[in-house]
Image 1 (cartoon, rainbow, N blue to C red):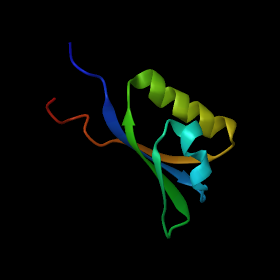
Image 2 (image 1 turned 120 degrees about the horizontal axis):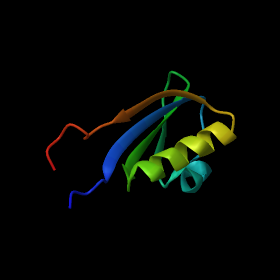
Image 3 (image 1 turned 45 degrees about the vertical axis):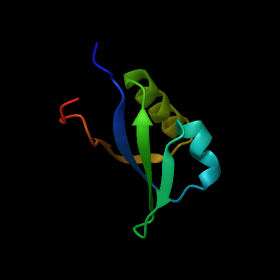
Length: 75
């Protein structure tokens, strides 16, 4: 069975404090000079990704971009 773990990078508008990492699937947070925050890390499956996206929505944050960094790589 193939693993469904993938590495994602999610860009949201605005700077978040590191204290939000635990609510955002344990993804690392990096504040960038453009005023955005990059969330990056591995998520177990699509359900975990959707869970992070729901938290972003529930917090009223603006989602800018979602990238799967290794979806096209051979596992």
